[in-house]
Amino acid sequence: MVRAQPVLKAGDLVKIDLGCHIDGYIAVAAHTIVVSESADAPPTVDAETGNVAVAAYNALLVASAAIRAGATNKEVTAAVERVATHYGVSAIATVRMHQMKRYVIDGVKEIALKTPTPDDITAGEEDLAECTFEQAEVYAIDVAMTTGDGRVRPGELRTTVYKRNVEAQYRLKMKSSRYVLSEVDKKFPTLPFSLTHFDDERQAKMGITECVAHGLLMPYPTLHERSDAKVAHFKSTVLLLPSGTSRVTGIDLPDYFTTDKTPDADTAAVLETIALAAAKKAKKKAAKKKKNKGKGGLAKP
Image (cartoon, rainbow, N blue to C red; front, side, top):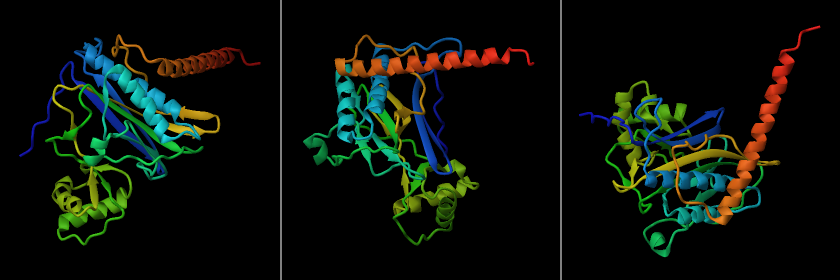
């Protein structure tokens, strides 16, 4: 029996998370929006939702600025924690930022959103080893914040997104399972995929269970906070260039997300630097556009 999917309604908080690659070179992005009554009317957003969205977005900007050659993952974690604490929200503990390489979306170097407590470690959470960023690296800046406790739980909805575990090997019994693994090895050997990508989706759904049971494929589970919590999620891709760190994906925070809280002094200084750089870049772009427009209007000799 196919479960009916919920229909979006005005006021719903929606997270959009996507990625693409060209010849194995990956770019990712994620954004949070609120559903409005119509395309012409801005949505109504409560104070709690506005605050957590502003906190998550500011943490994204601060983390992007903190990831630079010579800095460490611990420094980025501290910056994100500072934002979360000041805005009175919690980082989602299971969300990690990752280095990305060609055909590798989850690289070895990772950045946590929060430092695990002794109780967290006892419960199974990993305390990441310190690593240092280097020039020419690429990172997915992934930030999710919540008004809840930050401990997400598996949801009831079945995931359709998986990734090949290249280190696992097993001789599958079912024909449908062998079909799934064969298609994955041919088309999605290292990057995530959805069951909807298969020509025979019905057979893929039948064969996926055995592949997961023996560790050949890893699911991306649907995770939930407590029912009354508000979660905001933003993601960007950054490049560590000789000229500095460049954020190459992601869009601006919607104007309808607001809060009466102001950032701490350190965060405010970083945000001001980012805003000034963005304004300078926009001014330069506008001047260039005006200059090119003027050239186009000249009569040819």
